[in-house]
Image (tube, rainbow, N blue to C red; front, side):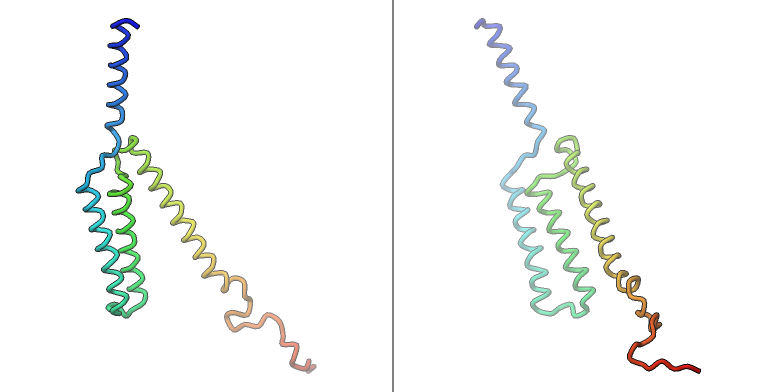
Length: 140
């Protein structure tokens, strides 16, 4: 192996090291911030539910859902290191696509389930499609 080959090898090795610098950099402070936010976003909803602070059920579901979404975002940013810079933004784009796809699937499923009773039951509105077989047949 000549000295020229060694220089090329070192240069290739250095280029290989620089390629990894585009990825996420984890720091202790980043993990601590994520941990503290996760604890806060867990403790507040727990306190709200255990003390019965929100008595209106739909409001409670929305508030707790908001805390859940915030918790997911904290985990994605501080622990999974997802942002627009990692892998040219494709990780974030694929995550957004997945969230939209799952939201459409859930919304469609809920829509079908809520409307299935109305659409499948002919006597739902108080109209009887078939006469009651228990009543005797009367002729005028």
